[in-house]
Image 1 (tube, rainbow, N blue to C red):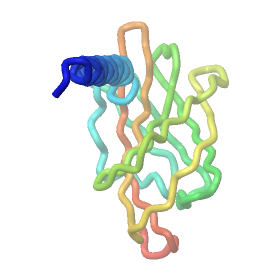
Image 2: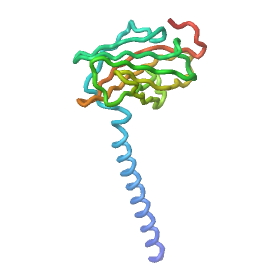
Image 3: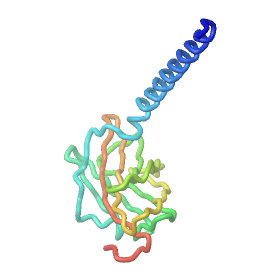
Image 4: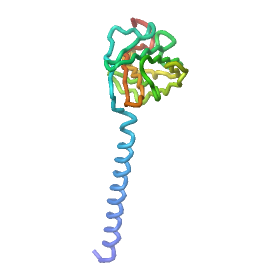
Length: 169
């Protein structure tokens, strides 16, 4: 092979190696920066109450460190692909911000987080919507994320939905 043809080939290979390394570095920075947003580190986690019937009405959870979170979602029955009104009442907690994160328990349903607006006196409210699932029944965990001066406090609430709305407690 003539000497003048191998030189451009080597430069092209080196250029591709540099581009791939640069792309990998950019992807690594994006994952590093997004990780805390997607998987926040909790200072305190309230115990899950398996007797909570969020589809029927509000439920409350208390932290061992003190403070209570009450969650209400309307309309009752929590339909999928329909506007939901979300209300959170805090007692004994000073929040810098409150969000509600909906996550499928058995299936990843993507990022579905709602920032709630302060209404005064420890009350927060917002609008959200649950996506429809390919399964008829879906178990969800709604995590109330309370950002305090000391860190993040998380209160998990579980409930089920059905595409048909039938056969749920």
